[in-house]
Amino acid sequence: MAVQERVIIAGAGPVGLVAAAHLARSGVPVTVLEAGPRLSEESRASTFHPPTLDMLHELGAAEPMIAQGLKAPAFQYRSKKHGLLAQFDFAEIADVTRHPYRLQCEQSKLTQILYDQMRGHPNFEVRFSCPVVGVSQDASGVEITIDRDGRDERLSGRYLIGADGASSKVRRALGIEFEGFTWPDRLLVVSTPYDFHSVIPDLTAVNYVADPERWYFLLQIPEVWRVMFLVNEDASDERIQTREFAQLLMAGVVPGISNYAIDHITLYKVHQRVAKTFRQGRAFLIGDAAHINNPLGGMGMNGGIHDAVNLAGRLAAVWRGEAPETELDRFDKQRRLVTLEYIQKYTIQNKKNLESSGDEFGGELQAIKANPARTREYLLRVSMIASLRRAEELG
Image (cartoon, rainbow, N blue to C red; front, top):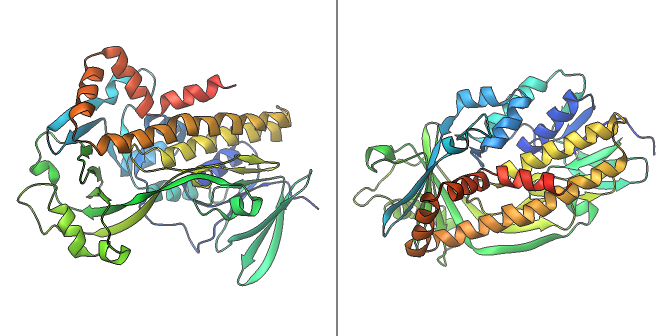
């Protein structure tokens, strides 16, 4: 095939655009193919961890996001039975990150920032309404088939990055198995402008509330709170997404308060899956195309951005002739194992912790708080700094 000298990226979400911006600024021409007619404005992920902000700072995107977001230096664990179990503060690891806090900001803000910054760059191109429907490759490059108004159109590149979400057409076209399982539970996210600070003393912007019957978490973003509930009863998706059902769940957050103003309701199925490989020849998977998990801990999008930075750095070095092609094998070796060891393991454990009364879980949290070394280790893990260090150890 006649190969165009560029990298093709499927998906213009936060992960795909981080990879694109990193590559383009490193001198690598990129074409991003987005299935939708424009950038998605869905809120979806809304937590950015300290090392992710450090990476975005290098792209010039952290500061504009911080200006639009909400800093959350502390987070809490609570239970319905015991109340506050423990509070942790990222200030205790300020020596290893320039951003010792979570930033609460919708992912759509990041995609718009990156798009606005990169638009017009000679190495950067985004094509909308271009869903990928086929992939083939040989030793010299990849050929991608896209659907353009009902007609197949082909373009080529030296490499392909699939950042096209959990239902990735790239992953399916490559025949890569998506190993794992789907939880029987569903998660309902209710967005409300109600001021929970006014009724819950000493509340932080990030709060996880354990309960064996109905755990939930409270997450503040600019202008609204997102309240995520476990839904395990036998009710239809249509019933669960009604405002009546949402009000029933919201009534359990603060006794005596009901009839909340509700801005938005979203229902999610919950998966824990990891692609069998993150690399197949000249094609790669990153973000939700490579791994999906429950949202407890905010590790999904952040892990995807870490994938993007890891891969883009290696691809740029290979492209410029500064590293051999075998350098790209390290991406799969590092990011897939870290996903299994950290993101999957700890998101599953987070869910189990919240499905408890808080008796044993609260005791463990207090033991961590009482030991400065364990507190530091814990904060490095939940901030995802530990997973990045582990990736480096893998070589």
